[in-house]
Length: 275
Image (cartoon, rainbow, N blue to C red; front, side, top):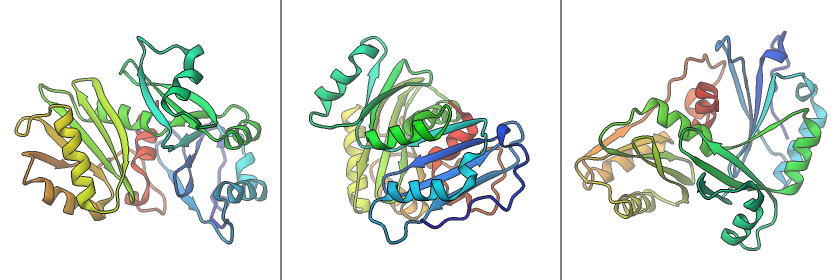
């Protein structure tokens, strides 16, 4: 696995920096920043070469680079996995976590994790492969495991202020889209849909809009993420919905030698709002 780590930079105080390893569906990336200074943000994707197993390639990179052994202030392991669901606090019980996951995702094997979702009264339950979980736990002193949806929900709740209307926020990825729906500070739905073209994305958005009883003229749709598809998607949706806007994220962080638009929005949200 080939990449450029910030070895050439002077990391004088790694104990003040947060390292995030993001296990996306088709790539692994690393980012690092100092929360107090908010003056720099390093981001790079690990490029796989001549290997079929992406995580095995990451492990090779881990053992080959001293960067990972620095005494970081905190290490976040963020994951995007299709095996996840939300449970309200009123019915969620930690001791029943494995039973919940087995009921919803029968036959799926892995380590079941949960995380409280900021200011929603909801927990996200998700699954990691056992080898991934074990390796991260062994390799870092006290890693914190994060589901990608948690910082997104917190960011959207803080930055897109609630009002007397419902909001749908779509995060476009290269091969899929996240949909988060809110009524005030209440999370109505969070889900991920794979898609092959813009027509499929339009279908998923309008189907969800209809199922949740959103109003065509009064409620709002905010679209963030992949700029290549965003303009075309907005153009097609204007025939059906009245209030559509393009949502950009502008955290108070300086991004070093990287185009902001290349960084996944969930990482920007995590750096901007934390958990």
